[in-house]
Length: 404
Ligand SMILES: [Zn+2]
Image (cartoon, rainbow, N blue to C red; front, top):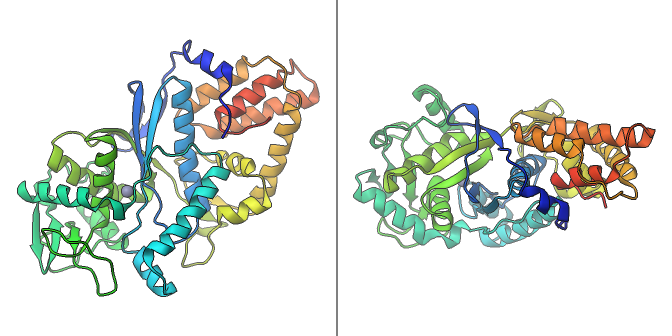
């Protein structure tokens, strides 16, 4: 991890800027009104496949937000869960003929190494779904006693008609939600459901699947309840910022809100921040197409700092395509930054640092940050203007790129 630079600490006290980010629920860029201590929950991986570039782009985004909030004087408590039991890891473990926890263990290790290589701030806590079952059962019991559930054939569902604000995060119509639910793990056509958008809280396990005892029968949790329980266990009933990829807005996050707020009666998350999706050379990047770009492969090819720099070329909310040549371009860009930083001079306050801070505050405008860093490196190399190599090092450090 990068060492804290002393100038960053002294600068904290003098700044009065506020970070602004796009909030999915409000559908606009808003000032983040945060206390000293910020509670952030980001949906983590399902450990059945290696970390790909889409994961890297997502976790880099929250890492940059954390770094800027820390720079502004906040402490950030990041909780990022591990979905080690759900409808995707179990079939994969079955296919490989290994225990699902064994599969999870090796993929979690790989993910941790990738995140460390990318210099992302470690999470304060990484709860695993399989170790948080008690909290999930408690939550479902709370929902049951509030009249939000029903059980058919051993499957306990959440009844969405009992939560009037269902749909207010995604702003989708019922028809749009129904279509997406079918695509993303829901079962709108299941005749046992009272409403197409109802979702599973608890279900019986197949013969070769893990099961836990519960008041609703032996079985396993639904996907959405896992994150509500892990978030509330770790961070309390209200968190400040909830993150994840934009494909989680519906149904995952919409369902998290419904379950959580139905039990607590208070706002589940004050801000919702979502990242765009990464494609590959004109097509969807997906497991089924076999074109996932894995971080572990990419960092054999280029410096992990160059991966950060490459991803910063794309705004976090945009869906973008990754092209192979971006890797070598990013490595050349990084080389230029390293060359320009050279023997850093002691001057570390300057317009470049202010420019980077204000671009980060402006809905995390990383393309602008990247252009500012490369522009400064160019002028240092050209000998134009004051060299201020120390400013370049300081500004890059704000973005988690160590040029020392
Ligand atoms: Zn989640």
